[in-house]
Amino acid sequence: MSRHGHQLTEHEAAAMFEPPSWDERYSGPEQVFSGKPNTQLVAEVTGLMPGTALDVGCGEGGDVIWLARQGWTVTGADFSTNGLVRAARHAEQAGVAERVDWWRVDARTFAAGGRTYDLVSSHFLHPPDGGMLGVARRLAEAVAHSGHLLIVGHAPSDAFTHLTASHRKAMFLAEELLAGLPDDFDVLVAEQRPRTMTRDGVTMDVHDSTLLARRTS
Image (cartoon, rainbow, N blue to C red):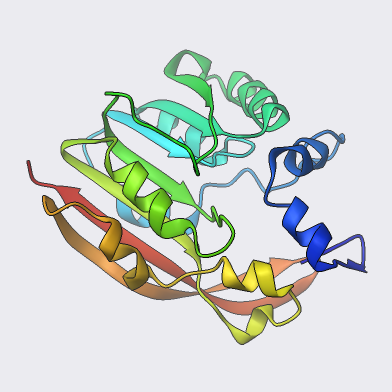
């Protein structure tokens, strides 16, 4: 990953996995992401009966706002204070503030603490050193009976050869997360889905690692 045309060193890349880097990223006047809901969220959640939802790594709140507009009661969670402030402002502007609340938490140390949700989702959260398996295990604990877990991330790809080794290592295949699911989950989707994305004016073909599972007990 580069920032403002600067190729990151491994030390700089490591810092980007921590809250201060994201607080800095969200401190400027410009919007970082499009505000549109993620493609696989729309594909998998459209048609589900709205209930309670937890979106971990919610960033500026695009997915939270979309879920709220579909009738869900949503908690947006992120480890960036500035990101949550920005997300809350966007929810207010979208007219859905009464349907959402916010939780500052690091997914790497997340604990459900008895809270459960009908939908737990996470999109493009990439903890370092292959840490997404542990995150998947933690998120599964927050899924209610008959609820769904949806995790989407970047699959390893030649399209990302410009990134640092630590960022490439943080990517994952959907199948690699299966070991993090308790026995009472049925796997509905575990695949890499093709998608075209544009970033910094460059269009590339990528794959979204997509895991959807349902709790049966």
